[in-house]
Image 1 (spheres, rainbow, N blue to C red):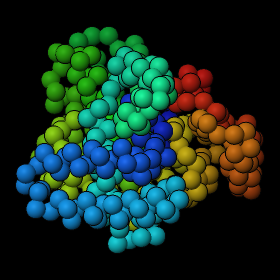
Image 2: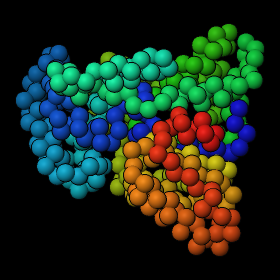
Image 3: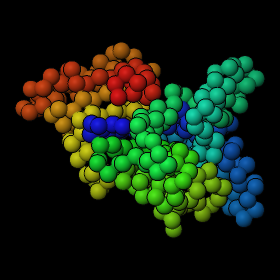
Image 4: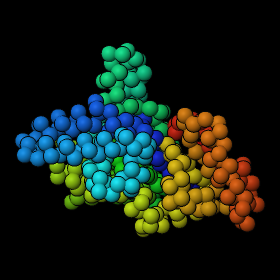
Length: 349
């Protein structure tokens, strides 16, 4: 179990080990012709009810793709904020890509085999196919964390207790992979426990989606919930895209207020798969919301030393300026490392 008040802040990279795209990968899937568009055209062709609007839809989507590609803006959120008339199409595309990744997502040994398979396929003939499928990048930190959570739990109904508030998640992601994984693991770890009891257990675990969740799972909401890996259809896409918010729409919300309070009360914060985009740091009010005795550990996989040092220095300088926090050696309490989520947790959790 985890005995310190711990907050995990999840960026897109935290879902990458399970087949979900990073921000840069999402841009590639949208702009590269063998990514989103090819899959979406197949989807349209299989749905007879969409044939009358097919040409118009493709034309609108191609307009979005052309502009986004030519803009060279790396963040789709920033692009949609600059082009509000195109934002509904962008959210629709994001919803489609999240469900497409969900359909192909894998966990545990299956995810690790996917990653090994991907690393072996390097021929020019196969590059097109690799680009058109999700990447499984990074170590399996869900597996590692789950086994920490159930340490010492023995018995046919020994569910973990999340009511003490020691564990919380603040996620910038729209996907439902973490919620699905935890529920599926508990159901199969304690097969004699009734499903409603597992759901009640997990509902005590705080998972805040600051920009929204595509749709809840069945255990989260029996009326509005949708099973994991559903058949993609128009009703689902429209409903899900309406749930997607961007940072420029979501500068203040009850979820953000809760997230900032969790950071203030934390003893340790893990920034996992987090890109350190200024807008995301600002919306959480980091580093000023870091508690006076909290330690911060962050992944920076693929960043150069100069970039990592810049992130650390910015946070440290702001903390030193704080009359309370500045007394507690913030340079010792902030570690940003060039490693994936699993390695960071194995080192510091």
